[in-house]
Length: 482
Image 1 (cartoon, one colour):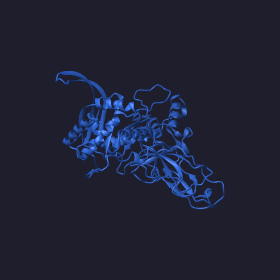
Image 2 (image 1 turned 180 degrees about the vertical axis):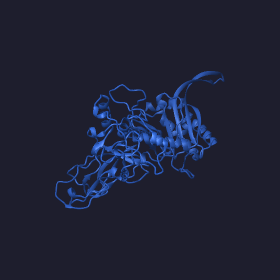
Image 3 (image 1 turned 90 degrees about the vertical axis):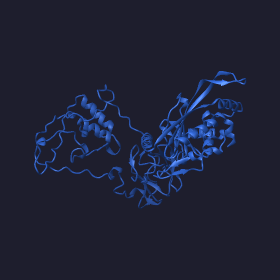
Image 4 (image 1 turned 30 degrees about the vertical axis):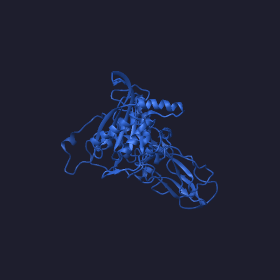
């Protein structure tokens, strides 16, 4: 699998659309590997679908599959001509480690039926070291503890998913009582829950206590605690029991919700940002009456732009006026960027993503609006290309449409700043009329909060940036001058 995004460590294969083999008889030959490349700079991804029909050879440059990272779906092209001889990792397999063999490709004219499968590539799990064998120990009092089900030789030789192993060990269940339903004979969480339901209904085969082998005694002799340790045949679980579908929840139960790839990446990056970047915050209230008036005038000419489009343009103009803020931090030094590329936060069903509008300072409001709309649609459809969300020099997150007055956003490294935009709200302000008399007048105010990296943008620079941004927002005619 090619490197498609910065932090990939494993992938989930969702669906294969290319069938194995070809209709003619060919000579035997050595297969070519389709590997998940060991590149830790790529986001978590999963293999979506293959485009080549079963009766069509694969040519170099053909669209072979679509790979969904945690941010987008990208088409993968074949680098060789040939025929897909063997699919080694079945559909639905999750958390396939990078470097694992997922399929074999042979050249046209070779016997795909007789292709030799590498001993270490037929199963991703074969990369794990074998479980150590248990040896006999001197007789002694044994302690009853939850068994390590897949490490007992000659007993439960079945592959367990992590969730299934936890349930079985917690409740002392025997997985050999039912047939695993997972791919390649994997005993899944659903199998474990089914077994647990049968146990709770009172089936005698599942109610047998399980006692682990006695621990090995040290050569110097057993200690007093080891010699007298006696526990119940049904040990109390060390963790709260897992809730069972269709049954009332017991005290301390919970429902485990698996984290998607994007959620895991978001959690990791948020934790890294908040723990490694010294965040500083500054806020300002902006009067957007002039923007709202200009927006209505543009609407009369059928030019539809949003307030956020004006905010993006005003930010780009401010960054052009203050290039010291258009910087990134690479861990060693500050880098001042020549191009003003603004990342806009877009909420999707799978999580937050920040597509990038390139060279914003050189674009007009109408062009910015079109770019923002197109990128937001591609983000929600999962169709962003890597170059459309990787990089950027400044981020903007707008929660005004959700009724949020103001908030603080987390910096997206290696960028140095992110602007949090709240909703427009009416407030009364004292103003002077043409005759110098004071009176109350309603204005539409919007709070913008700047989160800045204190290592490269100090408080004084951040304050001046907000002051300039406020002036550009309140006087949109200045946006046409830059």
